[in-house]
Length: 308
Image 1: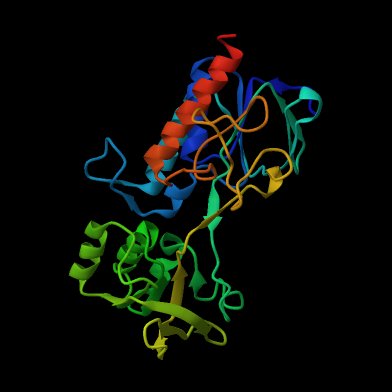
Image 2: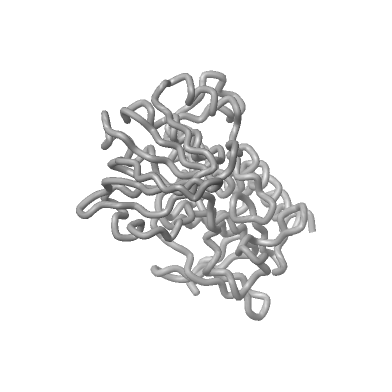
């Protein structure tokens, strides 16, 4: 362990972690935030956010993320980016976080590691990753201006990313296994209005084709079993998320899907350890909700360290 000891350590620099840091630092609790990449979380992968309160005209995800970080730094949160937590040490009543660069001690810990996109495991998916197979429309969508692309998924993320892709692609084939989308009807209606979206409902992807890059996707109709090969130059996959909780699997209680189990205040099964955001069981994976959970976790830390 390093000689330094923090009042609280936060793992994860998305909306939940940054909000928690704002609150703990305002309480004059010495706060360290560890982020494996750069701060921002899911907002960094979203072109325009229209449902975060206070921005009636919407705001770019990158700008919102930058504002979160700047506010946390203003109140004194020590942010260490590109420092990934790889293990926890909770032995003997200690709270320690190990990274590739060193170890950190804290009086309390807030886990906000977020999630990553699930993969489908389709033939061709792994082989063509980065060569037409993508999990981020904002990152890669502009590369396919004037071309046909496919989006797999039916939730809010899939619909929003498909809508973003219509800015560039000539056509977006939206593939979903059910007879209706799970995402917001408003976004689906906006997709229809573009005239660029083709809805392939009751369809499941079978394989992604191509040699040096994506050339097609094959889908199977769930009602008839009939297969169709659709010529596309990119496939964007948005079929759910997996929590980034592998590093805590032996230290706090997780549910069967790997999400962190907490009480309503965000307390985990370990003393002094709290959780917030997308990796917490029951989270609805919305920015506003993640911020609220960050507040709850910070208030629980305050009660633990300040009030008693």
